[in-house]
Length: 405
Ligand code: BES
Ligand code: ZN
Image 1: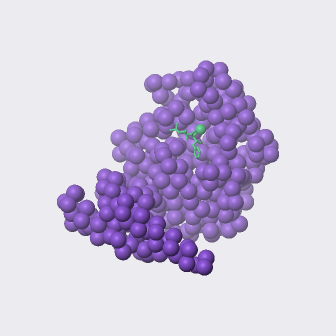
Image 2 (image 1 turned 90 degrees about the horizontal axis):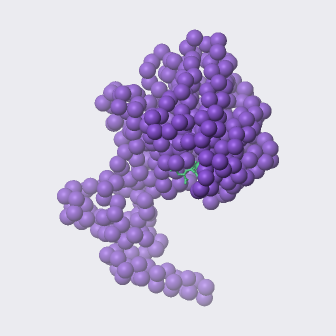
Image 3 (image 1 turned 60 degrees about the horizontal axis):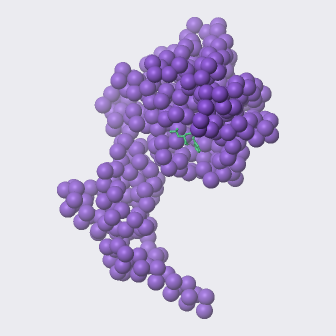
């Protein structure tokens, strides 16, 4: 009986769906799901032609979008592409998400091909990576979180916003001391007082690897200059994680092939302003950024997953590379994918500028730290320790070394 009822429901909902859209009547719920890649400008039209419920946007990068759909919608899609966009085909069909992602990855490669840049995502630095992973120190990360969250706020227009970034500068200058190939400096912005901060280890080549996060914090909507905004998780945690990667590479005497840049962006919380200027500047100067890892919120362990890769506004091939790193070097760390749903952090600035960027996040979006942007975003929310962030520091140091060689 139960079987008949659910079967009826299925037929009923399938026919409802078919009536409300242009899907052929014979569509069945049980039908095969496929993946397509198409120009992002055709997404709306695709949703109209096969029905918004039976096609779903998965990710977009460099003007190409991956969508999931029912196989039966293919015909309607072909008509649309031909009639509306004057494209023959106009979209590519894939039997798996992996195959669709490979095409997106290939796009990034095509972009780089103009400059003859090939990104090598192989894993072959086992000895060095394991050595550096073992050096990740929870206390070091915790200390930086505590220091940064002790400022009243790190708002981009406030005195303490400037002071906290100057503290970060001095911390990174200390790390660079004794190395002739490393230096820390501010990247100044004309439209507001808080600078971004950069720690650079010059490599043999001018290709750049970026690891960073935003150094600013906010709380509330009015009187933000004076509001209490410790921003321990958002995003003292990402800056502390970045600092730990830099400490390990610099103290161990790692000599990079490529140029490694650690960044503490200004003014993220008011629209990704600092990172937008930097990424556009790098693009304008023709710099080759081979990979960007964004660390924004790394210390709140809110999900069954430890590390959640945001699939939107990021590079699918690089995301897969980081997934491989986690599987190989941190097998105890559970990871998966989720979406921000909008340009939620500085990785989006790099993506817009045409560089491969990833955003590994502390939890699934639904389980994220609910205290961010309040006076209660303190390390107490993470039981007063930086255990969760250590997983991100290990992943990030492996990312740098594997991408560098
Ligand atoms: N750390 C957040 C971004 C975030 C929030 C990522 C939740 C994943 C889950 C970031 O600092 C932030 O607050 N971003 C703004 C958007 C930005 C463009 C002003 C936001 O999410 O509202
Ligand atoms: Zn925030």
